[in-house]
Amino acid sequence: MIYNFITNIQSCYVDVPSLLYYSHIPTALTALFFGILILIKGKENIIASRYLFLISLTFFIWTVLEGVLWLVYSSITMMFLWSFLPLLYVLLNLFCILFVYSMVEKKKLPHNLLLYSLALVFPSIIILITGLDLTMFDVPNCQAIENNYTVWYRYFFGASSIIFILVYLIYKYIKSVKEGRKKIILLGAGVISFLTLFSWSEITGSLTEDFSVTQYGFFGMPILIGFLSYSIVKFKTFNIKLLGAQALVWALVIFIGSQFLYMDKMPLSSIVITAVTLIMSAGIGLMIVRGIKREIAIREKIEKLADQLEHSNERLKDLDQQKSQFVSLASHQLRAPLTSIKGYLSMLLEGDYGEVKGEQREMIERVATSANNLVTIVGDFLDVSRIEQGKMVYDWSDFDLKPLVETVFNEQKPVAEKRGIVLNLDIEKAINFKVHADMNKLKQVFTNLVDNSIKYTPKGEVKISLSRPSPSIVRFEIKDTGIGINAQTLPKLFEKFTRAEGANEVNVIGTGLGLFVVKQMINAHEGGKVWAESEGLGKGSRFVVELKAI
Ligand code: ADP
Image 1: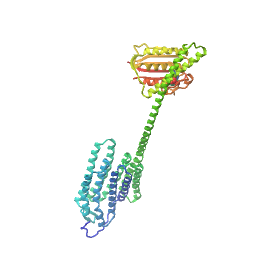
Image 2: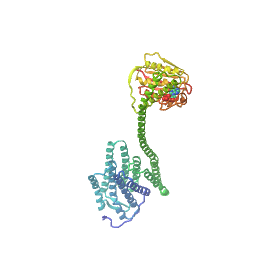
Image 3: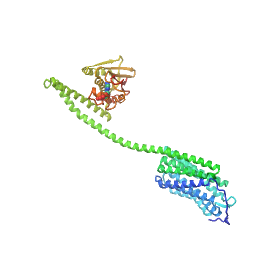
Image 4: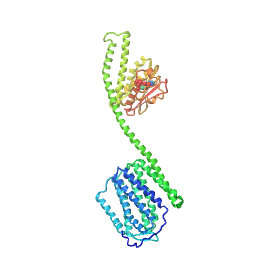
């Protein structure tokens, strides 16, 4: 380098700004540490990690040079070191552009663009080699005097970089959605505040020739790191474990906090700035470590659980399907022999094969009852498997409920009488009880409910009523004076296999499937509702079915 204006080496002394160590050492080290960490761990977006490393490295060199410049006294050393700063400044801006591009596009810059941008740096290299940027050394103020043109070239470069990044990110923001937008905001906020603070302090320093203001420019780095760390943990931008980000934030806090060790040498302004920065960094630290840690933990847990759940869900569905198919097959297979057993038994009882009397008749009657129960059970199993496989077929029509209820009543009356129960029917005086429904299914529902009431009423009365509580509702109701249902069982009554306390004593053969089928069938009707009420054990029950009137 040719510094022909230096004829003899001068020495000079200058007041070291109070913020010097604080602004240089922790930021330089943190930046380097962060850059290396990203380079090692940031496998997800290798190109961006490399550019970020280059930013950190350039920043580190710049910071070290800048710091050393305050401490050396020899003019020749100062001029030599100073001449590197413009190149580093330009490189820093360029790396920021390349970093932003590779973060957003997740790919390398096209070769020709890379060449153009390197061409932009070329003047800085010329300036460095020729020593054009420094015109003379100002001994009284102990600083190099910079060439105005090269200063303006440098800052034009800096301003253009910021504007370019801003415009590019706004364009990308508009074109992307949700999560992509958040990433762009974090990236933009970090890079732009870093470059702006950096350029602003440099420009102000150069223009006013008061270089102590450049100290503030270094605070841009922690801001950039802060935003990038947040982005890393929030979006796993570089897929670094939370631990890395945690260590980083806390290292930063410790670095800043360590400044208080020199408190007695610090002016009040530095103490205030240090305290504010410390509080802010600790705030960011807490926010990152606690909030995001929890968020990430929850997210990972949810992802894992969702994965497991999906897995077991698939398996369960499979098993359920297999079970339903098995039940359906078994029930079908049972139905045919049962029908023939029932047929032969009734022929026997009717005397087709000779008169059956006394004990023999009693035995055959018992077998016939058991066969009938078995038919009901097999029917229930078949219904359940049809419901679960979504294969229940409904045959819709418009009809009046009155004749249907009367039929059920007439069929069940002898059964009730046989058990010593009084079965009553009360049909309200109304124009009609018309509904849009499946007649056979409703007959099955009503028969089941009446049958239950008879079964679970050892003595007393069972009363069926049909009414129109409102113009849009037809209500079928059955009330008994039977064993009742306790409050704990009531909410589960319509679930599969629910059998209330005491049910076994009154009616041993029961599956707990009847009411499940009832509920599914009624729910399949538009506006259909069914529920049970009971004041408790021994206090009777009331079952209500409501359908939409037409
Ligand atoms: P099952 O009668 O085969 O046990 P259901 O599904 O028809 O199955 O009934 C489920 C349970 O509801 C019965 O076991 C019984 O405990 C209770 N239950 C049903 N109807 C009545 C009723 N009228 N009074 C008292 N308990 C009843």
